[in-house]
Image (cartoon, rainbow, N blue to C red; front, side, top):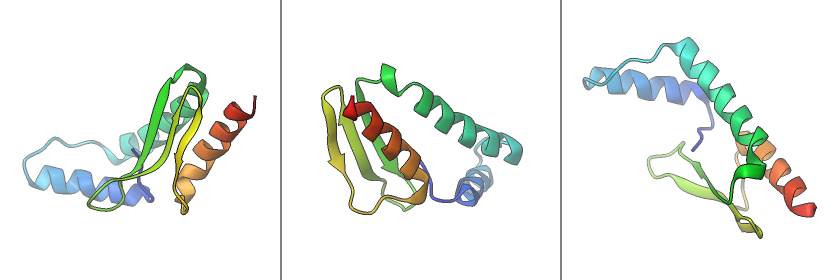
Length: 95
């Protein structure tokens, strides 16, 4: 799952806190965003099935889907944050 803007993630955490949920420091949200993407990209070779969901809107939208045989689903309009995932998947399946 990903969001188009890190500020949206920060706002969602703040809303969760207002509703009684746990707090996450802004620095941790930013760090985890980068770390999560890097972990995904560096471990694509270990993944048998992948669904990438854009969670920027109220209803998450599947934007990419792949399994060990190749790409299975590709949204016509990928958000910018998903371009690197797409590029790496394209490279993976060219081999």
